Amino acid sequence: MTEIVQTVADLRQKVRAWRAAGDLVGVVPTMGALHDGHLSLARRARAECERVITTIFVNPKQFNNPDDLKKYPRTLEADAALLSAVPVDVVFAPPVEEVYPEGFTTNVSVGGVSEPLEGRMRPGHFDGVATVVTKLFGMTEAHRGYFGQKDWQQLQVVQQLVRDLNLPVVIVGCETVREADGLAMSSRNVRLTPEGRARAHVLYDAITTAATDIRAGQSDRMALREAAEAVRAAGFDRVEYIELRDAGTLMPSDDPRRPRRMLAAVWLDGVRLIDNIPV
Ligand code: PAF
Image 1 (cartoon, helix red, strand yellow):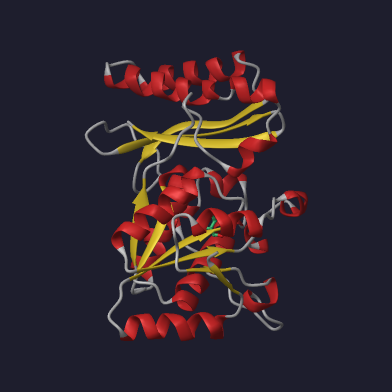
Image 2 (cartoon, protein in one colour; image 1 turned 45 degrees about the horizontal axis):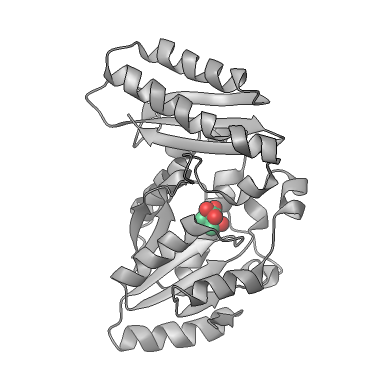
C-alpha cells in the first residue's frame, strides 16, 4: 500500500532526498474521492516523472457553500488503494491544521482569468484554489504539476499563477476522461440519481453538437441557445451558463481564428455539473 504522509516535515525529507538524487518529481493535486480521471493524471505523472506525489486535501477555502464542504466524500483508504495500483510514491494527506495553521492570513488571488464564469458563480472559489495550489507547490517542491482539462478555467488560473509568481513548476494539462456515454468523470457524478445519470450525457452531446454547428458556419449565439434548450428539454434543473470563450483568457470571443473553448455549468438532480470542449 502506498505510504500516506501527513506532515510537511515528513514529506520534505523524502522529496529533498529524491531531488538530491536527481529525480524528477511530479505532483497530482486532488481532493480525494478518486475516479479514473484522477488516476489518469497519476498515470501520466508516473510515465513522465521518477517520483510521483498525489495530494489529497479537501480544501475548505475553495468551498463557497459550507454544506457542499460537509458533504464532500472523504475516502482516504479507498483512494490510497487505487493509487497503490498506479503506483504513486507517496500520498500527501495533511490535516487542515497542517495546511492552515493558527495565524494563517495569506490569500492568493489571480486576476483576470479567474473572474468570469466559475469566478462569478462561485465567489472566492479561485482564491481558495490559488492559495492551496501555491501552498501545495511549496510543500511538495515538485517539478511538474498535473491538472485535468475538465476544470479548464482552473487550469488557466493555475497557469497564470505560475507565470505571475515565477513558480518553478511546469503545469501539465491532461485530457478529460469520459464515461462511455460521454459524461465527464467527476466526483459529483455519484450524487446523481439513476434517472439523472442516464440523462447526464445530454450535456456533452449538446455542447458537442453546438461546436460542430459553429465550425460548420452556424452563428455562435444560435448554437449556444440550441445547446441550452437541449439541456433544458432533457429535464436538467438549470443552465448556469453555456458560453464560448477565448481558450486562454476566458473572455468572450467571436474570433474563430483564435483557440476558443465552449464551457458549461448546469444543474441536474441538485448536482452541479461542469464540462468544456475546444471549438
Ligand atoms: O481540482 C481539484 O480537485 C482542486 O481544485 C485542487 C486543484 C486539488 C485544489 O484543491
